[in-house]
Length: 494
Ligand SMILES: NC(=O)c1ccc[n+]([C@@H]2O[C@H](COP(=O)([O-])OP(=O)(O)OC[C@H]3O[C@@H](n4cnc5c(N)ncnc54)[C@H](OP(=O)(O)O)[C@@H]3O)[C@@H](O)[C@H]2O)c1
Image (cartoon, rainbow, N blue to C red; front, top):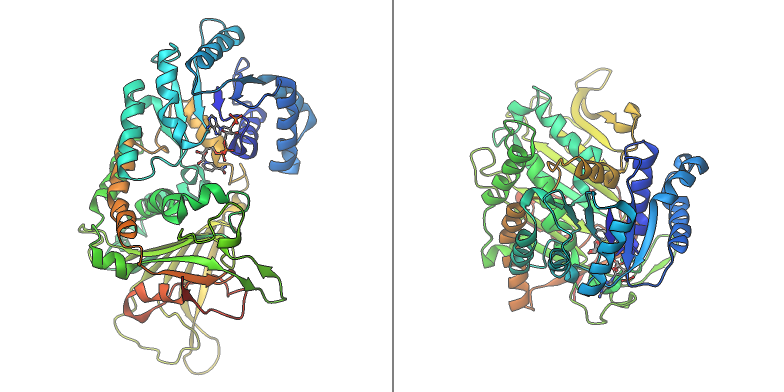
């Protein structure tokens, strides 16, 4: 395996730990070697030292076992090369041969800035490093907009066949995301309810309680729509909304995902103005007094930046199952907590028999919590003990940790393992990338052409601009799993 961008952040935090976990589970063949490559001048020994450091930092303490670490490190080496230089890529090829002989299979991992995704495939081909057994993993973003996504697909497909290309979306590697499929398609009880007749609305929230940390330069050119919505959130929406595939294989499963994307109701200019709310965090003082910096004061962020750190929008799906059921998706930085969850709101009972309630909401909800405390909660009403007839909503809860087994959250290990086995079900196909961009591109275009479209400021530590409740039909509000961390929930237009 050759990691381009091997000296970078992703390799350090995710890839090396994931490969170690595969090694520890004896899932790597004895002669499996990992070459990290980059322009940074490092020796293999120095790289191994760094790798050991990242293992001590980024894997669970209980998994850091010196015997396993010692046997893992010799699999690693580092080769200095600039992937833009064809001569360097040729030398890299020589290095692969030195390590692996003439008879090898290679997996390339593109973990560089995305601009290089357009250059590296061509250089690999020119250097004669691509054969029918070669595979390539490409990190998101899969394009910056529709045009660049198409261009990137064209470049990749001019060098590799589709079944050699693995576009990684680490959300799909998470156990709990895969569990949505089990919940829906391994149980007979949900499927009959899973449609417009019984479901009123669906909310998908994936938020963080951190800012952009050291990634200001990257984030300021990206924003929430590109970073989270166009890929992760719409993927979650597809899992909730898809038809049952006729088989769980790469073709059938991914066909159903693409079908959902193609069924998304295109947004008119008016709908973009009305149903897509963008926000950016501003300064706040949390309860207790800690000051949180506004986005525009973060390192490497333009002081006049109009980049959205929050996005909430309403999505409609035009098909028989979902006609008239709005899907609301929301993501944001500097929110009160880190949570990813899907809330399915079932329709209320047609007649209210028990009028005295002491708690809202009164509709049944199924909450699929992806992180933290992965699991599912079904909320339903019961009678309170005692005289009279008071009802109260109670949760029936399952948390994933009760099952034990492989640590969930180990998404990269799972996906790299799948790729090594040639399993591409959980990777994004090129037509899915384009279909998703087809839906989201008009929003980017609208913002570009109408810079006056409001960008709402929200104090860090709150659930985003209040106005994001406006997009929810019937005067209802977002289901927030906890309260604001500040006393203010004001917002302003930036
Ligand atoms: N970090 C994450 O958590 C994360 C999550 C999801 C997706 N991704 C994606 O994964 C990719 C890598 O992310 P990252 O955070 O690891 O990025 P990074 O640290 O900024 O870059 C990775 C490496 O790429 C090399 N590089 C940078 N500019 C280059 C250039 N102009 N020419 C050649 N090489 C260059 C650098 O190594 P040398 O200077 O040694 O060449 C750098 O160490 C990105 O596309 C990112 O969007 C990252």
